Length: 138
Image 1 (cartoon, rainbow, N blue to C red):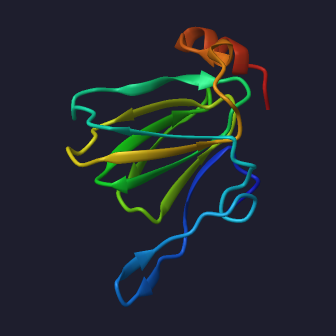
Image 2 (tube, rainbow, N blue to C red; image 1 turned 180 degrees about the vertical axis):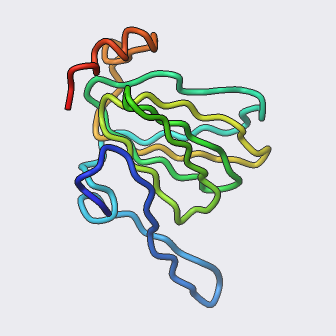
């Protein structure tokens, strides 16, 4: 895990056992924060975009447990596209990162781990507002 970047993709170990594979996530070891919330998305149409927001205080780790999806992230200066297509790939997103998830495969199950409980007041859903807020940050 790289702790100096605001978003990055990393791999967790996959342990082969006689009856299948096992991957483990431990907070502050495989996940760079204490986990306070877990949710998952599934049954999302390939043509649907989800996310399209930034969070003021929440950090996230995203994992496609099954299938695949693309995650487009924007820090206000640069946009990068990540492909989540294996249950061992983890995408870390720091707070104040604009995210859009799209191109979900039919069998995609996207697991999301967060360091914060849900708070609708911390969401920024207008990209122009987001760009103004991050304009003078780093």
